[in-house]
Image 1 (cartoon, rainbow, N blue to C red):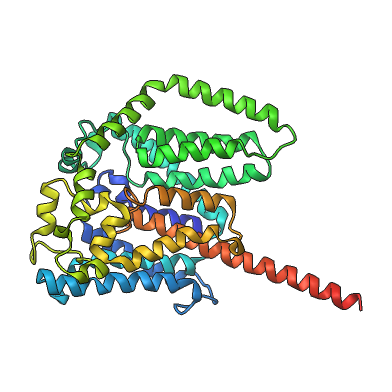
Image 2 (image 1 turned 45 degrees about the vertical axis):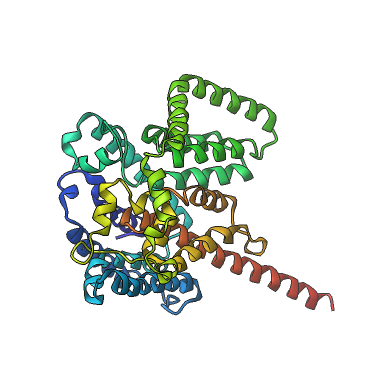
Length: 401
């Protein structure tokens, strides 16, 4: 099995086959076991002699794990959930092992981009199937009702994966513009437009327009004029949709009964933190066998997964959130010299920090794991380049003596 084939199957498992039957019928436990077994296969199948669990590029991973494990303490002290019960309840967090797995498999940038592009095409096909043949999919109608969604629409889990090819090709355009690079960008942006996730679509549109204005070409003036004409035409054709999305956003911001508004107020209130320790270590991931808190919250439309870093903090403490922020800020530290595409990726994660950037479920977990891995990949690549430059300078100085 090649690295690309392995990565695609891995994503497929994390997405439960994008909920298409029979894969969407898998319980969380079946998904967990299948994913862990497949990841174990990856650890043994792919040889990487330089890999070590003590490697410096896994330090952030261990801090995330430490934060998750420490959150079991307040779960016991404030909510009566035993450590044994926490181990059972936290079982889906075992899928964080995907981070060291990716480092062990060591796919190339091209592998990641090609697999994410294939996933984008698959998700686009799934979106059309779900739109016109919803009976082929397992659909959580209770969740839809809680989010006030009336129709199945185009929504497809894992849609964020479609942003990765966009970042990559926009990065290539900063070096040399090629019209053919617009094809995957256009297809992925079409998919994101159909999904209508505003937290992703609005920032991606801004980043797209900004990046297109910064392309490198000796014909830049003509190309930019052509691109602006295409963007204006697309905006004109889809004006009603954009207007509705923007109006909906302002209406929700003014609506105190909107789920995210209620969640924001709740998570910042003393009700969300029964003790000082919970501000630091979180409340833990609670089972209904120990405390009805999570069920009570969901009945009122309050979900941790709706509040990004704030929701993750409430469950697993501030330590993992600090790590997330460090990894997002890291590309902008000058000495790291991360590529333009990776900087765009970090901006999107930051834009979703209070909404969709919640990494406690498999769908978001693998997206963040890919971001984590690519940061490690670019850092290693940058170190090799700097060492190569230093070697050239050193040899040049020796030869001049």
